[in-house]
Structures are given as C-alpha cells and as structure tokens.
Length: 202
Image (cartoon, rainbow, N blue to C red; front, top):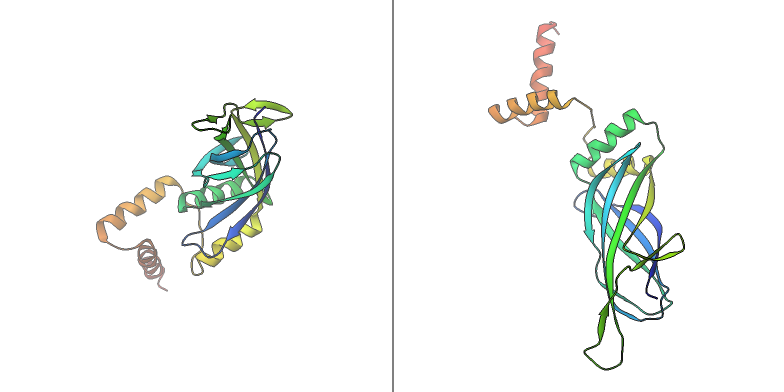
C-alpha cells in the first residue's frame, strides 16, 4: 500500500521577506513499504471566513525524497498580498476572533521503484491517508495563527501606515481621482483634509 500521512505542525510569520509572508510547516510520514525517490506536492491555501473560505495562494512544494516509514518536516512560504490583508482586516471587523484559520488542500504524487533494475519507476495514485483511510487523492489540513502575530507582522512591514476600511464604491471614487491627478492616495487624503479644515475655518 502506498500512502503519506500529513500533519500540520505550525504556521509562523517571516520577517525577512520582501512582503509579509507566512511559513507553514508540515510533518509528512511515509507509511508505505516503498522508498519514494521523489515526491511532488502542491498546496492550495484558503483563508477561512466564517462559513466560507477564500483562496489566497497556490504553492508548489520543493520536490523531496522520503524513504519508507520515515518522517520529514516540509516547509513552504505564502506571501500575503495587500488584497489578502484587506480581506483579513474586513473579516476581523465582522467576526471577533483571536486567531486566523488557514485551510490547506494538499495534492501530489510520489515515484518509487517497483524493481531494482531500470526502467522501473512507478507513480502513485491515491497517495494520502485520511481518517485512517488510505488511497485518498487529497487531504485538507488547518493551520492557525494568532491575530496578534498577524498584526505584529504588518507593523514590521508597514511601520508608518494604518489600515482603514472603506467601501469598494468609495475606493473606486478615490482611485479615479488618483488616476486623473497623479496624486498618491496619501497625498489625496492630505488634500481632502486641507479642504475640510479650510471649510471649517481651521
């Protein structure tokens, strides 16, 4: 029988990347009788939003080998774009929570030798084990990050910025002015504040 047992070990912020990034750690055990010469796994990462979830990234895990019965820790990185961080911010306005939940959908294949002499590599089908059942094509795991860790991560990358929530309609109106005038959003907000202060006689 050929299968992998996948466990989610941890998720943690990365502070030395170009943009806010999370590092996921998986523990993977080869519970088959075959030595896997190479395994290729892909991960679709979703942000859980109440009863719904939003795809925030797809990652190809670096290929790795995994001898029979051994366990290996695998890591992969997920950049958090501005849109993703906005979605998290919006979620926290509606759902009071102390943690963010990421759902990982894991697929892949492994190759092993069916006999000592080449060419003899076989590709697995139904690679994973889920709830004690082998032969599953994909598994889903969850990882949790505290909201405090996420906020700390953003503060490291956006030291002089503050996140505010505005409607999509308001954003599009502001963007139209930005495109027309060449101002940045920050400059436009300064102009609007100056006009408001003049109107009030400040």
